[in-house]
Image 1 (tube, helix red, strand yellow):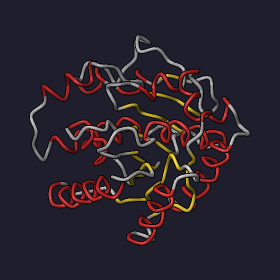
Image 2 (cartoon, helix red, strand yellow):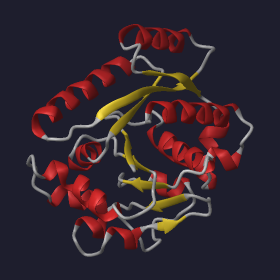
Image 3 (cartoon, one colour):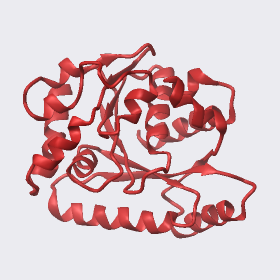
Image 4 (cartoon, helix red, strand yellow):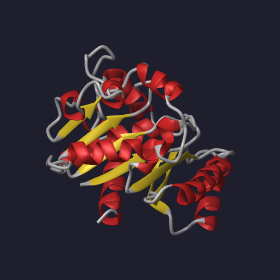
Length: 254
């Protein structure tokens, strides 16, 4: 079982889109996959078709009221399960005191609770705001995937993530590694996008995935229909790109 967190301190970079569609592509390939929505905004939950009042949530797990396994929902998609989120998660973050022990809280709960399950991949959709939820979600992972939008501030945001990871290495015994940087929302018509791709490959060539996720209407529409792109429009360029990315992911995550 491998734990993968999709993380970036910056919002609007395709983080949730990547969490949903990587999970769906893995499930499509026959891998038993659990998607955990750790963002109080709950976009991953609604993005695969569940309402925020489903009665299940990560929140009561964190407060010790309910076991994690009781909060797992079977989705309509074969091999893909979900632990939903809701706004209550923000309350947990506000009420929990920070400390080095608190950073590893998720890691212990998730690994202990899922140890006897058959999941091959657990994908965590992290919140974009730096806080206990995001740090816990990162520390819970074996590997991080960092999506960055092809925009002006991409490298600046990436530098902040690298600094955060360096700090975590000093604070927790099992810091996550970076599996790769995923370039998203690429528009080949703009020189800026081309320049960002060139700069990222120049500065961190070994970390960047070869696959680049394009900016497409179909990828943007899919969450509003509660479907991963593999079901919403399996022939569109966005779906082709996420399937290609998933193959790269599997190769790196061996």
